[in-house]
Amino acid sequence: MTVTAKRLFIFLLPVLLLLVSCTSQSPGAERQAPQAVMGVLDLTDWTIDRPIALDGEWAFYWHKLYDPEQLARELPDAYAKVPSAWNASADFERYGYATYSLIVKHDGQASDMELYIPSISTAYTIWVNGERVWDNGQAGTNEKSMDPHKEKRVLTVSSPAHELRLVVQVSNYMHPRSGITESMELGPVGTLSEEQLKQAAYDMFLTGGLCLIGLYHLGLFLMRRSDAAPLFFAVYCLVISLRSFLTGETVVYRFLPGVPWEAWVRAEYLCLVISVISFTLFLRRVYPKEMSDRIISVFIAFSVVYGGVIAVSKLRHFMFLLPYFQIVIVVAISYALFVFVLATIRRREGAAISVGGAFLLTLSVFNDVLYNQGLIHTGYMVPIGLLIFIISQSFILGMSYSKSFASSEDLAAKLRQLNSSLEEKVKERTLELEEANRWLEKQTLIDGLTGIANRTHFNAVFKRMMDAGQERSISLLVMDIDHFKCYNDTYGHLAGDECLKQVAGAIHNVAERSHGLAARYGGEEFIMIAEAGPEEAAELAEEVVSSIRALGIPHAASGAAPFVTLSCGVVSYTSRREAPASLAALYELADQALYRAKQQGRNGYVYEPAPLEQ
Image (cartoon, rainbow, N blue to C red; front, side, top):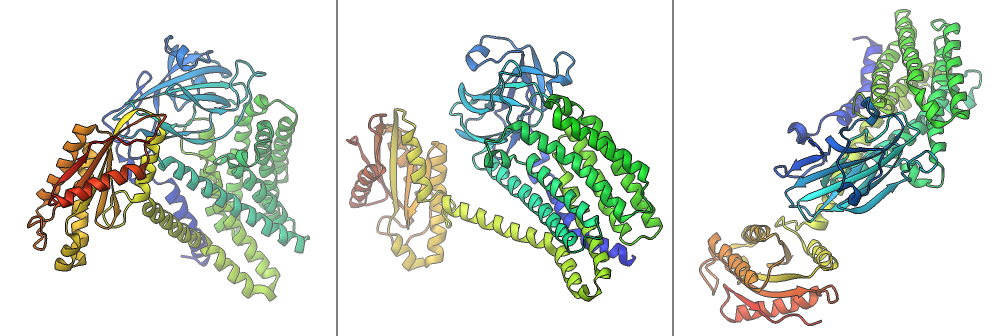
């Protein structure tokens, strides 16, 4: 392996690892999720424990903006494939408005879920189970009545029944790809919002990295203005950084909501034009003998003309012309590859590194062209390819400057070493932070010893049940392991911890079968809440006490039985909208019942029949 090849491998290895980690398939993706058929997605046999794409055939109503009530009385005009542009079918025009509808059937185990809404061109309103939950701009029946907007969202939706009914009104008179062209996803609470946060952080990392590299090379140019290569390279990095910021998780639309959507789109497209011009001029400075001035003039002329169209024409016009300009981009990248190969053959300094970086950049550009046309659904990869290419070019410029400034050779070597390990260090730190965040989240909701809900989680669930405002029968069970201190003194604290785990598991199983929630409330005390009336509550308490007996954990020091037993206090209450229950009051009654159970010899339960008076 040559010295140049070794440098290329060592320099690009951390970035290649980052690319693989970002594009690899998740471990849980081996099982193919169901697809919607004729407007219905059946997930009743599918556990929603991870995000699921709501892909397939959605009911489609062309040139109609139906709300859920109107939609229930009409038959669909067609069944549109999602994700896909509606104009993929010859039956529907590129510009117009329509309504999508999908019924998601699920097992009903999770009443609250998260819904990920991607960027939908270019304005839409979404209903969930008849409730209007989100407006992205203003959907309209013509270009004047609509207000375009671009923002990706994660919404928490409730589906207490076994169906989730989605209705999406979409209107588009500007973008060449109309309709739901990216997958909407449904997942457990916390999963999709966390993924969006990670993706936003990843976008900001790419944007910040490109911006810093651009500013660095701008500083190099200001210190040595005789060489314009760092200037063109800096402009290239900065405009790509801005474009990455505009095309990622749409964070900019939240930071600056007052800026019109049209202005952001023009800025995004102008960044693309400026990047082609600056990239071409940069290569001309680095490899003047390999580049043809005539070919460079052609690329710049096409870019300037398209930039002028972007500046003065309507959005729909210059967006429609984008595929043709993308052809220019592909040709320019292909020509750049030819230049790099030619420079490598002629043994120009750093040309081999440029070939490696340019090859990955070319792959990412082809990916983005296909993704923009809706032919693949991978996401934008140019920022990653650009980061690899830009780092490789930074390495080449660094080599050049190290020769130009012999007095700063040691400093330049340290800087290259720092740049080569930057990605790996950031990745390691990110993994540490993610692990710490996961640990903190777990500590917030789960008891560290027993693995069931903790007191904080239980209190939050109780409050949500009360805030729901529905009249329901609620039973609270307060439980305590009999003579647990004697158990610890006799068998030791390690055995006591194991006893707590087994008891917690048994209580959790009973709560799960009754669709309730069990938690460790402190020490050897446990608490359970379930939607159950008086008779059901008594049966539930008997089942809990019996399940602990059935564990058969020896307890020679117990005065109640030769094995571990449990005492339980039970209280029932019918909640009302005008008089929601107080957890403290219910707990006090249940605790009094627990005390009487202990007075009656333990290893049993006492039911508190009296209702709670507010």
